[in-house]
Image (cartoon, rainbow, N blue to C red; front, side, top):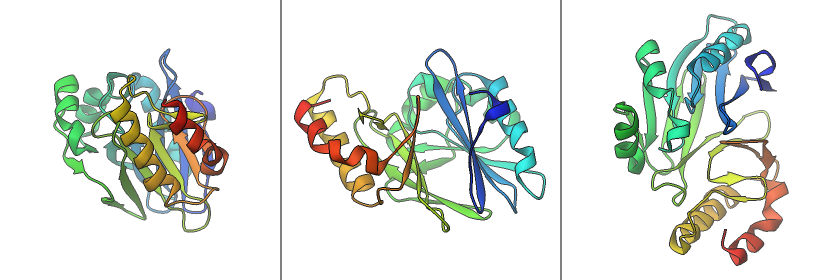
Length: 223
């Protein structure tokens, strides 16, 4: 998906745009508040020019000139942070990630995250909030970002922890898989309704309702 057709959801208070970058089909998401112009970019993955295009495309989404307030990273893997250093230096905005992924992101990018997140931390932006949900397993500090739309379904930016048809890669480690399955089951499926949208780190999205019947199957198969 190019920035030219990046609009994913036009909600009552915010827009959600997405661009897919690199041969790995990494998704980067941009939330823009329509009245205040406050923006959060989720995952500065791979392609800085494409991300600039995404931000530029969102200029029409707000009643005022939009302004990026945070670059939020779902997890430390290189394909999700390749453009983080460039965009952070260029924009001067704060960066955020899960506490247990700080060291990995620092080592990979040289960026020192300004906001270190744990389970249920709330990010307050001008006009909207995002909740951090810690999903341990794909990486130690993997974070899903949740926008609870006051006028409609919840939107979950799941990184590489939840996809259509299964959980994220845990490298065949039974303990990591058990941890991820437990966290996803309790902290996502146990907290949000079936109409909640899931926006993963790669590929197409889904809903919790579409995936809920498969939870037991995923646990049995172990991946």
